[in-house]
Image (cartoon, rainbow over all chains, first blue to last red; front, side):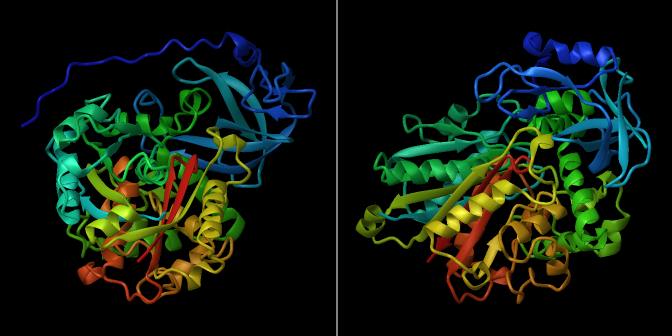
Length: 130
Length: 385
């Protein structure tokens, strides 16, 4: 016998004010990492370095190299609007970036980074081959 | 002062139509009976539960009350899929510092109370929600699938080698009455099953299982005073890594496993793992995870994990029999129950009570390896009789 629980809707309001530049950048076609004058680079970016200093925003540019990827067929709740999607992690110099990619890629391939809205209207990182 | 395991219990894993606390009670009662103790004799209870997939969101007191431990703890611990090992460590360290003489570690998880898409969305939060799942819909299989594509590209590891891990797991689970899956499968069935996250297919993945396990730990003093038989904890190692997958040192292994193993080996003075253990239980939530574990635990060189399983080295009679109970892959992986269920299997083996799955013992020593998330946490314990 099964009893249904009362429904609990969880949708959090995430306060990203300290790193709002990242979202502003996505809308302008830019992907930012953060860099500290102590020499550390961060992606994903963060407002403070572990050393305690404020970091600076630096755009990630140039070509990246695919280090791993997958194609998600068993799709999680809230992504049901999408067909199977390819997640890629590519290295750009001293950081690695995660993004979606519609081109077929292999480990070691070169990719270019760009930003665009996905099917749910969220701006994010994409890669294209070449 | 040594700490030993004096009683173990484990529920049947699978889709279980009972509440979280009822499931926990099955394991707890078996453990109490195994140690010939009553609830009153336990000083501290530790309840491991990842939760969220089950209706009770703050489950520790509910489990504790139902199992008859109100007033003794509960200490709730969570370390994703390594929660069970964190619970063992909490009980172990409480005894080590003298806060408790006898403590119980309970791991319980109900994973089948929500639908599969919801479960995938919860599991996909095991990394860093804001930067990964939120944008890119990462799932737990997707994380390990990315390790698999990196490992395949660098070392030539094949989908067939990964399938062999699943075939071995199902063959062993078929002889384990507590296992979720009770049937053998072929390489062709694994390779032909539907894709979950390329290159991982359905049979490369552990199932969504309900389950509970419990282990009672005691100080050497309590063991001797009561004339009990104990399996001793001879080594403990733990480590962790970044929540963001993009920040890892590499994708062809888990650094946390390597560091946890180094710590445990150092503590137990182990220099050659292959010559020190009769068998090992490793964290095979996905087939690629077992292959990486052989390498990161030092059973073979980095990149040679695929060959290790292909040559039968991780099977009965091999250099290091691994997951003789069916592994997470086929016995099941009810998150918080997993690490303690490994202890259950090790204790049964070292006492030579493993029936059809009994390993020949020479060293009377074994290793458990439990990973949380995708190498976010790692625990290694060494047990000896």
